[in-house]
Image (cartoon, rainbow, N blue to C red; front, side, top):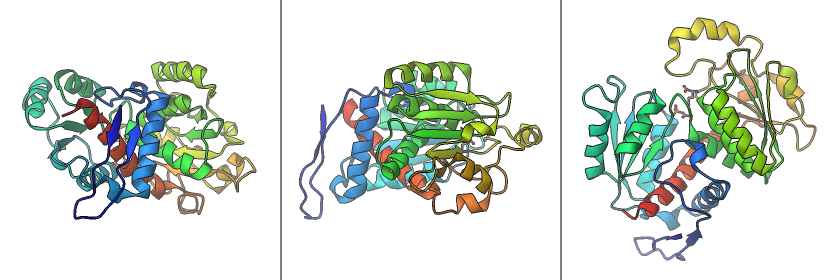
Amino acid sequence: MSLVMKQIPLGVQTETKPIAFHGHIGKDLLTISGLSTGLVETIFETAAAWKAEPAAYHGVLSGKSVVMLFEKPSLRTRVTFDIGLSKLGAHVVYLDHGQQRLGERESVKDYAKNLERWADAIVARVFSHDVLDELAENASIPVVNALSDLEHPCQALADLFTLQERLGTLAGRKLAYVGDGNNVCHSLLLCSAMLGVNMSVVTPKGFEPKYHVVRQALRLAEQSGATITLSNTLDAIAGHDAVYTDTWVSMGQGHQEGLRKDSFVGFQIDDEVMAMASNGIDGGAVFLHCLPAHRGEEVVDTVIDASYSLVYEQAENRMHVQNALMMMLLSETGR
Ligand code: CP
Ligand code: NVA
């Protein structure tokens, strides 16, 4: 199937750009494992085309409405979806669930059954991934995971897209993730395995990624030829193209702050760690972080502010990959 870009309004002429989809995207994007290598490549191709020529995509989602439900705070996810969708001509309604969890005022099922009558898609950031599953099961419209306790798929797509932009190719590259085996780590593991990126995960004991996610990633890696290694010592960081870290205390884990900060001593990314990681080619390893960063905790200023740090490119690319994704999800449903 293909998506045909509209003429730009206001009389500016452009070529109509068909984009070939490699495979069929499902109704929702709840986890990276709902995608395939071909679909991720299509998202990246569309994102690159949109980034290079945004005017060609103005208005392609005109008349569509997207509801954003957020139980947790956000800068990047909220702004990139809102501004990105506005650029495509869609209307966004933001529902702040910071004070009231989904399911408290009325059932998640009723929420889904109401929203599907008005909106064309739901973008949701939730504490429990089960709530996303329940929304998706009950809504006939696409549901997109904007971060749950289990995964952050839009982030991983933007991260791998950023790495591809910088390194040219992804297959066979080496990505080291240091820190908590959390939602961001899970989506990165699955996306890297799908794209043939060799990933080393370095965590303190007890903070490894979930076993069932690692198993899923290993299955994907078998098909792509990628390797996945788990380690509890920083020695494993040697010889990588990129080093990634995230907060030691994710949203919803505030009650564990003391324990976590004690457990992660020795896992901070500083200049010495970056030097250890260097593969000795292409000017050393690049640094990635989904943000928000806790400067002086998981990463020091001299690393996050270094010329090899791609953190703001990652943030920018959130918008490009999400726009590509939303164009695909909304054209698949034909709504
Ligand atoms: N990286 C990310 O999702 O940032 P926000 O929490 O600000 O949305
Ligand atoms: N792991 C972090 C990511 C924030 C974008 C969290 O869940 O809070």
